[in-house]
Image 1 (cartoon, protein in one colour):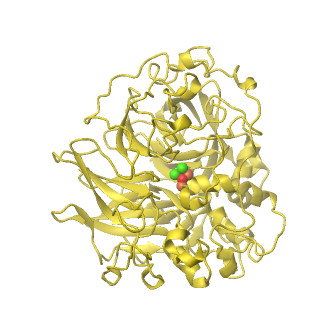
Image 2 (tube, helix red, strand yellow):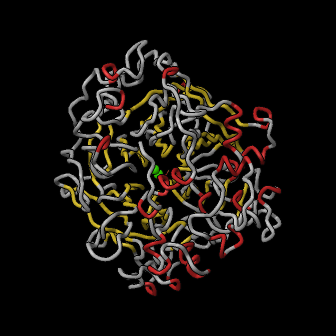
Length: 619
Ligand code: FEO
Ligand code: CA
Ligand code: CA
């Protein structure tokens, strides 16, 4: 696949980061052929990889046809235009768009011509909506939602050409990212934002925060402005989300590297190289705010790349960066509980060839308790996926890695390499089944699989993997606290209209439901897996017939997958949560093209509400 050459205005941030900091290119393919999957996965029929056979044999992969769809809707066709489509018998409407007011003072702040002015930019919904969760607080419904990044070209005056020209322009970009807390309510006309609610809050690239866990207060995170190393400012590139058992929000810092630059040249350190910190930043923050200059403040990036906890019930609360969960390009954070009551958090590191992690707390949690030290005292693990469909969680400790604890967590990627973690095809969201111990991770794609340091393996079995797959694991004994698991591939995305080999995808992929680049994922309360995509929407070549990015529903038991929603061209679908009564699904539409959703002016990233016309629950 040729590498994109657009600016990030035309790409998802993930895709832009790949282009800016590409991993090594691929080499041979042959060594993988004998790394066959030796027994069937959980599904048996739907994946049908075959016994003792190569996973690359297309006939084997596609030996068993997908079963007939049995979802309570008629699956839709692909979308190719600038509209959003849902199945017959369903409707949608916009809940909130980039620039919509959170306060009365900010009503009318957005202009289709000029966007949002600096003075009201912390009182509006941020741009490029991403992970989100809905909380029920004192009888109210409150959504916490990420704004992953901004598109500078549509936020800055045309004369700036997408590059900020002043500290004020940098400040505008900073203010439109981070997290938004907003109350929503349906008062007879569908869900709307409760403008002026006391819950409404913006958290930006500059909001005061604190840190806990082993790295907090160490030399690695001390800066001239914060000599104690305890008080970072802001959160960057908030991608996926999570929720704690005790009702708080987890926001995950992903491609934070893109916010830092060097005002003068120097060589990268090995750690900076592994994390993609270099040169000129995407937003030129470093030219107007020395905090983002790696020359002046080499420790500042150590204060990003964490999972951050926010209490949506308390607008005055200080967000906490939990260093015990490790520093990497966090996608989301899926919290479950071990059989003995310990807290388990599954996390992906979205970069080609990086790892899947698990955090296990030392203490246990029971209903009614707060978080306490559960996210500051525990052990971080990385996953090894063996080719025989077994796997293990490898503990990261000073003994296993030869690194001191703070170094090990701050440079978790290097620690993972030392213990022999499996390089994955860009781990995006992880979703845990609601009623059995089973977790799914979207491996979005990896055009460099097969290259240096990334030989194919059974869990990442295709060279130059442009379609992606979803891997899932079952912990030993049905206990998320167990250190071993078995795994299989729930689906290998592909294009059976174009390919007849492994790139056609697994048997549960058909010309009627095909997609590429699975990314966002969440289980609903009925145990169905909702899958969102962030991939190629050219509808040409290898992607012909796949249309725009989309949201599908997968049945984890039968393997069936059906297309439920198609996004406007240019957009990715990311972020999903439900109303308290489960009748409305809230879906994030990020970086839409054209002038969606309004048909005039700038395109506006938005959350849409989707419901069934008959009033039945929707997941
Ligand atoms: Fe922000 Fe990997 O998605
Ligand atoms: Ca994503
Ligand atoms: Ca992605």
